[in-house]
Amino acid sequence: MNKKPSTGKLYTYTACLGLAVGLWGVQAPQDPKTKRDDTVERVKRAIERIAKDGDPPNQETDGGTKPEKTGPAAKTDPPAAGFSPSPEPAEIATTDGGLPEYRQLPEPNAAGGAGKSVVIIEISDIIDMGLSAFVERTIEDNADAAALIFDINTPGGRVDAATEIRDAIMNAPKSMRTVAFINPRAISAGAFISLACDLIFIADGGSIGAATPIAMGGDSQAEAVDEKMVSYFRTEMAATARAKGRRGDIAEAMVDREIAIEGVTPAGKLLTLDTAGALRLKMADAKANSVDEVLELLALGGATRRQLGLNWAEELARIFTHPILAGILMSLGVLGILIELYQPGFGLPGIVGITCLIVFFAGHLVVNLAGFEEVLIFIFGVGLLAVEIFVTPGFGILGALGVMGIMTSLVLALTALPINVSFNTGNLFDSLLRVLISLIGAGVVFIATFAFLPKLGRRNPLVLSAAIESTASGGREGEVVKTLLAVGKCGEAESFLRPAGIARFEGRRVDVTSEGEFVEKGQPVEIVRIEGNRVIVRAKS
Picture 1 (cartoon, rainbow, N blue to C red):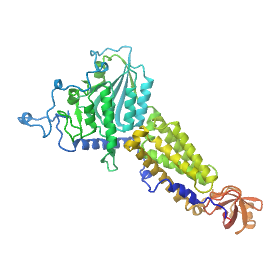
Picture 2 (picture 1 turned 30 degrees about the horizontal axis):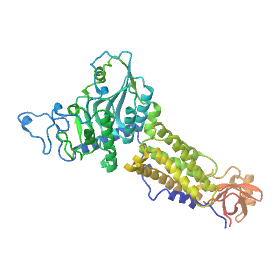
Picture 3 (picture 1 turned 45 degrees about the vertical axis):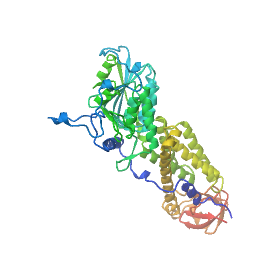
Picture 4 (picture 1 turned 90 degrees about the vertical axis):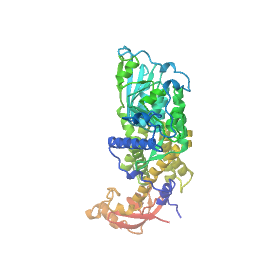
């Protein structure tokens, strides 16, 4: 018996990808602006729910905005049970020592800084990987700037994106003073970025805090993350605050509701500071209500301003790295490659598949999620899979390594945090799950399409080439099909049949289609039926 690389061989590859089919491709991509606005509202609602959990907040102890009261009650209402009034500024001693030199403000000067330049970056909406790439590029391209000002108004965003922005700020040139202007809110990842800056200015009615990591569920509900992730981000926040001469314990209380600080916040309540609270606890350096006021306080009112924004590549990268669209690109890319491996030649499926994968990796390259190493690993994995399909029989070590290579490259492209951190916090598992869902979705579509290939082929005039014309036309090759070829006639596959290809009968090359199985080149074949101009064969034992 000759060995046949039948369709079951490809089914085996697909089965190696997992046991369940996800819903990745079910959600139709929305307009990016609409999707971003919807996400902003979802995050805001989630933050508000987290901040309001437990007992009603004491607005004075956590720096929240105190509601106006009239009459005697304004003086006699006691604080909520378990809370202590905030001490006066003179009673608060920073545990991290005095202010470093870069946090000391000069004499305000609205006309100062002539001949110098300042860079202004607006951080609004959701913080994502496109923004992190933009900040890194801005710092690198404007190393001569006297100050880098972040005009912040954000409900938060991705932890990995905020971590990269934080690192870029911490590694900025010493001659560049980094400034966070909270106008009016820096929540979650926004607080993390603010604490990394040399100076923090906050507007009236501003807020900073509520930085516990959350995961958004499909019903817009905030879901708790693993304690490992909370522990990691709590440590990052504290270390960042202390590095800039601020209180690390307050930064930790913004992340972990279980941290209690006497006179500031009780256990069980996530800390968020308003303008007065941030100034009182020295988490902010001064109050300002506009960029002009910020520059005046920095004695850079007369400096040249560079208002920068994302370039077109970074804007596109923000779209293509969105989890839903990235999953769709992965699925379509792998599906296109599978179809090309199954059919002879190179056509539209291969072009679409390669284009989707180029877009996927290009977007992740722009935002520094992926490097060329991931691209090379992916190409290597596809190469091993092709060798396994066309050269070696059965499913062996090369096929397994190919599947592993493809999955590894895609997982690494979705992972921004260091591997050890991603593993310990569960982020690596989340990336692996996303890849599995996308690849399984591609495999299911592939199987559903080609399981009925012979039936579909009857309605597809492109399965056979022009070498065999329709018998209805009375052409010369039509007569060949009638007279030379007959059911039961044997020949030899002159090319791989997967399932279409070329076979030779009595010295003539004829386009044929197998019954859905793979047939190796050089293997004997037998005609099982002729349907018009279609010649159906099977491998001969």
